Length: 107
Image (cartoon, rainbow, N blue to C red; front, side, top):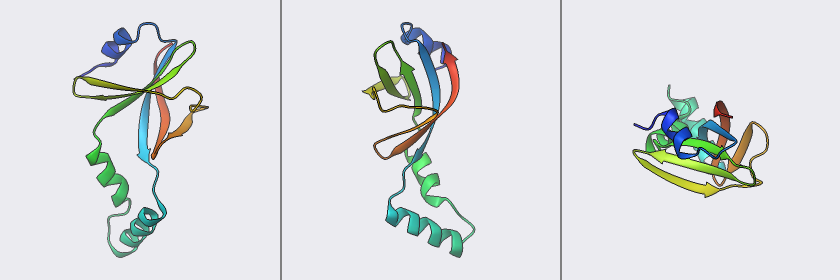
């Protein structure tokens, strides 16, 4: 399992590294389905729950001098995506995912 110190070591040149929480940005159909499930059963938020199980990756935001990277960590693999200019403030959206900065582990 990758620990915070391993992430910091991998991105030593980063100015900041943030742990992120991720939620799926629901489509209109998914919102309707989620509301119907909440009304008819004791399982509200079923779409978010299923999405959380489907994507067990850990997400971090790496901020360098001139760039920002969204990094997805699963098992021992790191997948980087350049999101320079898309991350403003504590919350931001990339594709169909919403991210919230949870904890600054470096910088």
